[in-house]
Amino acid sequence: MFTEMGMLVGTPEYMSPEQAEMTGHNVDTRTDVYSLGLILYELLVGALPFDSKELRKAGFAEILRRIREDDAPRPSTRFHTLGNSSAEAARNRKTEPGVLARQLKVDLDWIAMKALEKDQTRRYGSPSDLAAEICRYLRDEPVLASPPSVVYRAGKFARRHRAAVGVAAGVLLLLLAFAITMGVQARRIARERDRANQEAEVSRRVQEFLTGLFQVSSPNEARGSSITAREILDKGATRIDAELGAQPEVQAQLMHTMGSVYRGLGLFGHAQTLLERALETRRRVLGPEHRDTLRSINELADLYRNQGRLNEAEKLLHAELDVLGRTSGPDDIETFKATNILARILARTGGSPEEALKLLEDALPRERRALGPEHEITIASTFELAITYNALGRGKEAEKLYRDVVAARRRVLGPEHPVTLFSMYVQAERLAGDHRYQEAEHVFGEVLETQRRILGAEHQDTLHTMVGLGATYFSQHRYTDADRVYGEALSIARRVPNNSVMAMLFYNRACWAAIQNRPQESLADLRQALDHGFRRGEEMAADEDLKSLHGDPRFNAILAEVKRLAAAK
Image 1: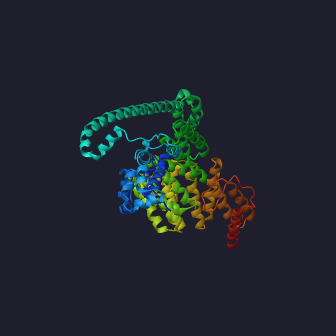
Image 2 (image 1 turned 120 degrees about the vertical axis):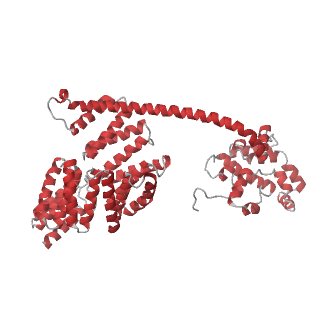
Image 3 (image 1 turned 60 degrees about the vertical axis):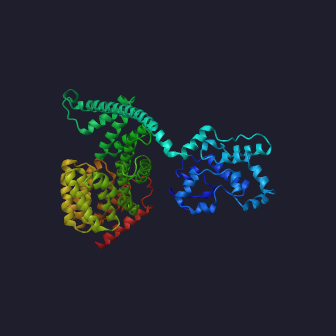
């Protein structure tokens, strides 16, 4: 049987009021007492409180209403309504109708009705309490069940005369609600004030810390030397523990911020240390469901994606989305961010582009409604959808979205923003994949020129663009131009270093050497490519588990490809 919220599951005749509420709340051992009370009722009378045929003729909502609201008649009363069936019921119990009716009165009526109370608090606390009560009856001892109190009867009266009592109670409820509302508001204002004060204190300490860092560039501190942004970052990373150990929230905020900056600079090792510590601190101090903790998860997952640690990134994102689903809902901005990164992993690694497509086609319309079509997250989702279309072989749809994304980011972020340049880089890759090499070369060249000026020659994005441009030259058989670009990129990547770039460069050099009929040099470059984590058809990633080159099937596949290229030459 397939069950879900909103579906009635079970036998209505034996269902308790709290089960009929269909909220899952307040279902405990007293629910079992109610169902056992119905069975006791049937054993005593020979029938259930409500006729099954009549109950099932009612609609779904009416069944639930009767279970929740209609009180069962006492067993002795129900027995008198059976008519001709009462004689058969008495015969089945080895007695006469009149005798059975007298036996049911008082104690058995009270026991059954206490078990069938709509109010859980008036029932027996557990099945064992009900069993003990029946044993007391069988031993002719006084039973604990008793008729409802005056207060309980007053409640029943109020339900019978809802309109009159409602008017009288309305004014009292309004006054009570006003008092409660004012109290809640006062507590909320106090909490917001405390939170604002705490955030202000964190911001103040962060500002003081950063101001202190930038003082290293003053003449008194620098002593004639030029200070780079990287040196300021490194100095700050060493001072976090020494100066902020007693202020974990401030410490975590700075580690998160500086880790993000390191990641933007392509310094993934430094970024990993800071972002992992920021997440650990926020989980301990703020809790696993705090917004800042979730932001740390998001940033660390994106870093793991950069590093090729895709399984770890995917695990973090699924955990984050589970928390966001419970606390913030599907249309929260943090939910959209996490969904984008997860889709990026699924689409770009060849793991599951179909799953990525499902995620994005579900999220993108909601992002457009909630954030607008030119919000960066909406544009990012459109970009990931284009990549997913490309992975699924839907090239024309992908190309249109690439053009839309580049145009939107030029308008929103500007033509020289790193995110705009990355969009153009992926667009150039798509053009090269369609063998439109001259168009791809033009876009790669434009991106590379801007990246060198804005990001610097050693940035990871600049190096990836050089690899893409070299591959475009290579595909046009302009081997001298390709060798020149690859050589320049390799010398830079060795200084940084950058495993993903070096793996691709060594592979391309191996192909170039094979075409020039230099097999030994080709094999040497292939080994270097594998050492740096070369994975054909996937994102580049370091593979620390690579034990033997010649025993690795990837090596054999690449070797066969190079031999084929050499033979074709």
